[in-house]
Length: 123
Image (cartoon, rainbow, N blue to C red; front, side, top):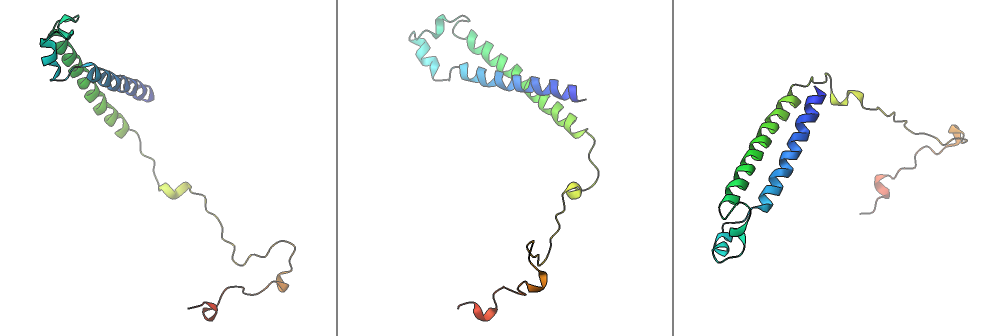
């Protein structure tokens, strides 16, 4: 099942890049007026309106492929087996050692409490 996920993901990324490229190549609606006065768009490979039709249809096909691969990726990801148990099940538990005394110090000679008292805190 992992090979299917990899193939669909690759097609999905290629479709996304194709959509980006095709949208950037297309002319806006304001470019038609410039083509009427001879800006060179009418002499293109596909003609004045042929390039718009070709690019818009190719963009629509790439968008349809992108949509289908999006749904396929969602289905493949949701059909994977879910892990049983808690998320915190494998978490490392650290042990808290209260009143630890540094090595080499006799615990009987260690200071009992070095914390501040309420009366020591300035107001």
